[in-house]
Length: 99
Image (tube, rainbow, N blue to C red; front, side):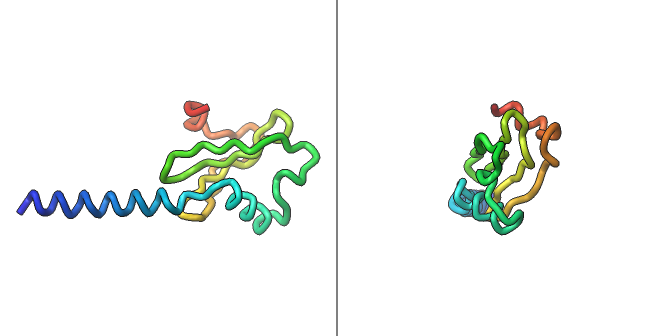
């Protein structure tokens, strides 16, 4: 009975991970989010230089850069975006490990 329970739990975990990987947002989704949230995409700024995307397969982080300063960092998961920093000098420390 224990092996059957392990198989069921393993299959459920795999289905959830596959679902998260399939709904992981891309840069176009992030652009659409910024237009809806802030009224314009980040590349409309005079000082915009790039968007840093770190892909963790089941979720991604997005940080726009304006010249040499980072903007607000968002975590994108299941098509939604969650703010994790206030921008400028508030870049999440745990993301520095993946640069």
